[in-house]
Length: 159
Image (tube, rainbow, N blue to C red; front, side, top):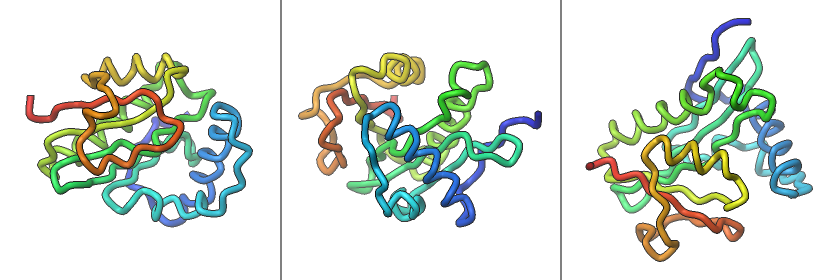
């Protein structure tokens, strides 16, 4: 097995990244989605930064950064293949570090995210990375909250 590589998304990653995301949405979120827009992963990352984790040529993770309001970032599209989580591979951490490096390069004040309360392991991961839970009304103006998200977190990059 080769080392996990985190790199910027390339157009040829679209089908594999969409398949990974669609599978996780179907299995874990209960969305029986065939959404055509998932095939255009780059467009759905809003163009501010999209990375993939690759293992032996297979896409095993994604993460995206959306910049809004000039100084705020939103973590979007964070997905890691279920069989690669918690396996000591560091895929989620490597993806997070890529996103935060870009956020700092862009001189953002913070990065916020929305998720679901049922994802305890994800919440623990975010807390380990310095994210603090906040109420929805404490999110920066313009945060692209999704309807099902019920937990919100923020990482202050100025602290």
